[in-house]
Amino acid sequence: MSQTATAAAPAENSGNERTYKPRTPLQMMVSRFKKNKRAMVGLWMVAIFIIVALLARWIAPYDPFAQNMQIMLESPSWSHPFGTDEFGRDILSRIIYGAQISLMIGIVGVIISVVVGMALGTISGYYGGKADALIMRIMDIFMAFPSFLLALAIVSVLGPSMINVMIAIGIFSVPTFARISRSSVISVKNKEYIEASKAMGASDASIIFKHVIPNSIAPIIVLSTLRIATAILTASGLSFLGMGAQPPTPEWGAMLSTGREYLRTAPHVSTIPGLAIMFMVLAFNMLGDGLRDALDPKMKL
Image 1 (spheres, rainbow, N blue to C red):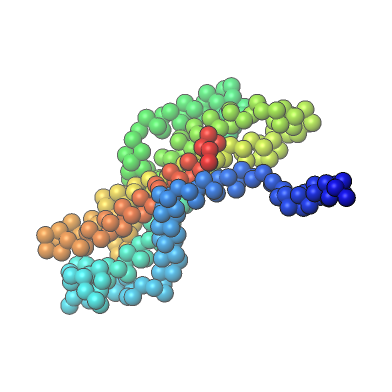
Image 2: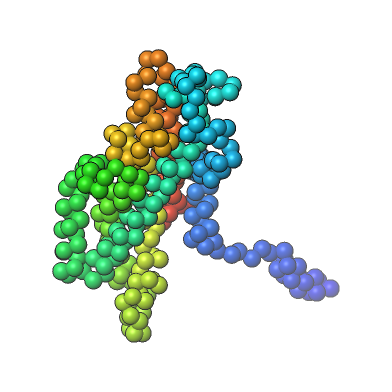
């Protein structure tokens, strides 16, 4: 009797036991990210900016280009929550449409940087030798110039326009991505799975795209997020100087520039675009810092 009960106990206990499934690296990363309150705030802020930009056509109360000289420089009111500018245009509508431009410039500029920088950095780190020396010396030349001055010089040569601003932002960020990519590739190219792939006869292109890039892309993701903030700030600075988006485009930097003349009589014309730039840059910086902490393998729960 007792033996039967004793024999059944393990079976009963085994039925109540919970099987432990180890978490994947992605699950651990998401868990670390969720526990970072600042990162979550940044994520929500970025999401709000993206939603506003995507829905600008439907949520903007007025046409951002429509002028009404009878209400020029009107202070914030119920009909115009952010007031109007020197041409009587609704500032709230221009801020909403300006989010599209800032995000587009930042994202497209960073995509250019990632594609070119990762290509150069991967070639430099994987093959080494003369290719490495040549590519890195060229990157050193670009990094010798302050990034904003380099972007200003490129736009001055190409001409002021949003497309040229994206190209300039893409070019001045390439050296940073190339160096980060090179360092990551060097750290993984001598791993056992890379040597195994070579021993099995895999081509260099196959190894790079299947093993090297996927295992070295984490710092690129973090840098991309932080660089979007830098790109938005640089684009606003170029537009502030008249080298970026041209009037009447509702770009935040250009709006900030035109509002300088009315700081005493209508400070909202410049302060509101300035706050929009600040919050968007802050959002991407907080998101980037959170991603950096979440992707860091040394961070433990």
